[in-house]
Amino acid sequence: MKIKNICCIGAGYVGGPTMAVIALKCKDILVNVVDINLERINAWNNKDLTMLPIYEPGLDQIIKKCRNKNLFFSNDLNTGIKNADMIFISVNTPTKSQGIGAGEASDLRWIELSARQIAENSTGHTIVVEKSTLPVRTAETIKNILESQNKTGKNKGETTFSVLSNPEFLAEGTAINNLINPDRVLIGGDDDVAIDKLGSIYERWINPKKIIKTNLWSSELSKLTANAFLAQRVSSINSISAICESSGANIKEVTKAIGMDSRIGANFLQSGPGFGGSCFKKDILNIIYLCNFYGLNEVADYWSSVLKINRWQQKRISKTIIEKLFNTIAGKKISILGFAYKANTNDTRESPAISIAKDLLNEDALLAIYDPKVSAKQITKDLDSKQLNEKQIFNKNSGWYLSKSINETFNGADAIIILTDWEEFKKLNLKEISNLMRKPAWIFDTRNLIDLEKEDLYGINIWSLGNT
Ligand code: NAD
Ligand code: UGA
Image (cartoon, rainbow, N blue to C red; front, side, top):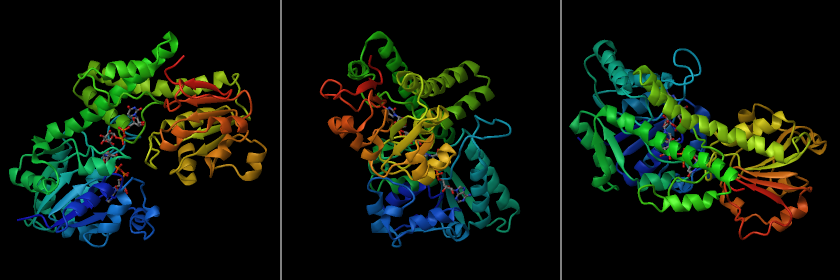
């Protein structure tokens, strides 16, 4: 039997784009994306494509082509589940904030809730696919919930399930390209028929050689491991950026020299303000929890150090800014360029901009924030404070506001901090900017976007990460 109807629980950064691409590539499959968050579902259904809940280049055009044809967004979970042959679970799996394992273990309440909703509402045989990133052996819990319902629930004896792990490797900002042309697709499971059915969906557009099949636990662990390795590379190069600053070496030169070694490779070697995003930290914490559970304390310490360097990198940037501005930034206007954790997304989860902005606000600075995609509502939530009104800005009160234009942030500013690698920050007109700033003026370039060799700095002092 071919898969004709797919349901995806969770319409977030993974569920939305992933299902949009499946709908685009499989016109004969009906794809229903369901979510308990009605505001999010309404945004997915908004006629104005600039109002979609997530910003991802290329996504709006796919939504335009498929929405209300074979791609639907709804908050009717029960119907979506009931009609599906295959259900993807793409719900959030954040780190637990309280209780046993708080600060390390994943909070699986939304996974369990999804499993219970599936158990109660599905009919016939259903393939359940873990899309969310999960601790190793979560599939066991899901199977347990599904099977116990089958033994005792309202559909007693009438429902059967296969559970597969199919972690997602997309990166935000490049999600559509990653989904259309992935490095690999990983499917873990022990039911060959179910694996083939899921595999045959991807084979419609992906070379079968790229589709890897493993056991469930290898699949779950591979996802955590991939993120841990990527994060470790960022912490490694960031640790070297500090040595460069102290020793007179240059981070760009070092990166080029090591990246040309084919065993190391040039990708993912860009030093910066520390990694952000909802997953690297959470997934490493998950590995640490697992290690401690298995008594692998040295392994836990090894991965903890990746997080420690990441925190330290953010702190040392705040400290450097304050020191260079004569150890006082009270009442000084500071232009913050970029609030998202990376370019081409409106996502701010774990963004280094949050902790750096908080450090500067603690010193009573006035922050003029500019980001092409992040809203004031989101920043209010992240900084846990309201933005200043016009009178307060005029009086140079301490606090923050979201600037409508990038140039406004430079007006009278003592410093500019480049935090996100948005394309437009690579083309700053330093001559014009210098005229707008108060002197002595500083640029703190945490992404190495300004070419120190080519650019005339027009009297602006510059601190560029990984350079003396
Ligand atoms: P998200 O927070 O953007 O989206 C999750 C959605 O699930 C939310 O809209 C939430 O309302 C919904 N939800 C939660 N419980 C539900 C329930 N019981 N029924 C219906 N809807 C429910 O999260 P995300 O960034 O899409 O991440 C989802 C998972 O994918 C996580 O495990 C994450 O680690 C993993 N992942 C994320 C990325 C990424 O780039 N964001 C990439 C790969 C993997
Ligand atoms: C990452 C992984 O790249 C994806 O494969 C994975 O699916 C995803 O996490 C997930 O599981 O959520 P993402 O966090 O969206 O994707 O973005 P990345 O491009 O990996 O960047 C993460 C952070 O590292 C960003 O803050 C970025 O600025 C930083 N980074 C990245 C660097 O500082 N230097 C680099 O060279 C690369």
